[in-house]
Length: 239
Image 1 (cartoon, one colour):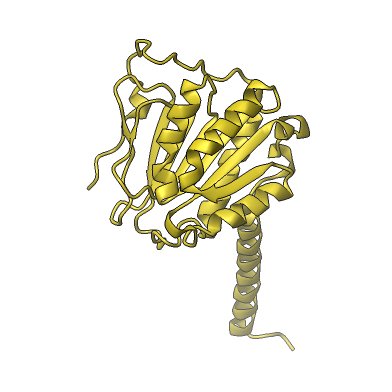
Image 2 (tube, helix red, strand yellow):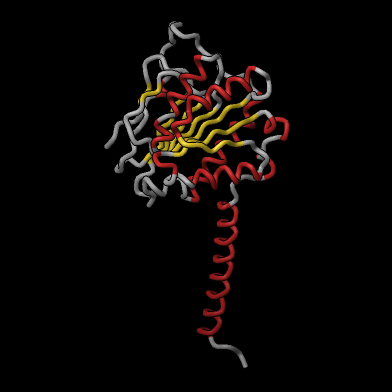
């Protein structure tokens, strides 16, 4: 018996829906992969890298940094997770390792007050003659001004929450990116735990380590004249 036209059309639509659903599943799997094997840093670059992750106030609201740290360690990347009040001693530790040749690539990540402390830690490292490859702040809670720079500084903040864009001081060296994630459903307490944010942080760290073969920006001597600020370092105005 020949099937009627309605049954044939329904089967065709069902088949199309199945193909569409399978396509979505494949795209989701690709999007959830933090890094491909091709983009993975080399072991040589990883061995001379250290990532410092600074928690915020009370040391209990930034536990997403522990997850990021565990994921980085799974890639073989050395990490230190500490409260933001330790930023000065951590800078001394990093400078000692850098000058001894054990460390070439320094990366900083902070959440809340940990993000607010990043410019101070960068400034101290620069004063000690040590460059910072990458710094990532997650929702810095106070008005933060970057006077000395990392090669790249990414400030991810919630524009309609307590977070603030980082302002660039005149003559800032390095690139400053302010990324407003309002409207994405993340909050100040959850931004460090958000899966998409964590994937971005890890991807940026992996990319920075991949770039570590290139010479780092020279560190300006304290009191030396600064060059004109790059247009890329201009922070966007809040709405």
